[in-house]
Image (tube, rainbow, N blue to C red; front, side, top):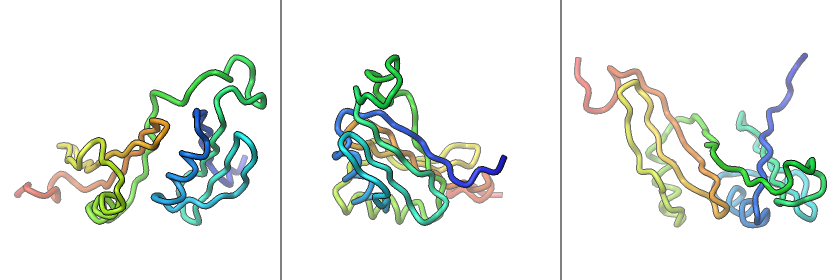
Length: 134
């Protein structure tokens, strides 16, 4: 098996709202769009995203009424502070402020109009973390 792309499929109430959010603020581009469906991609290593309207008939019957929940779409990147600043300046609400964990993870979160949690992570060794000394 050779995996060529990774895609996460998320069921939401308002496909257009999430589609606009991901294209306007997170650099995604529309790959395919139809009623109740949007496929989004980026030219880098980010996971592709498929948005499906809750209740759409292409979903198996036992999954149609579920809403994407209980998950965090996490992106590892460099330049975490600059990204947080850019999103703030664009009017995106930071729903979990930038913080640092003792194991070297620095992160913050935003939430899209459908309640999808997007987390941005930057890893540093605990010795390199701001405020740490040797």
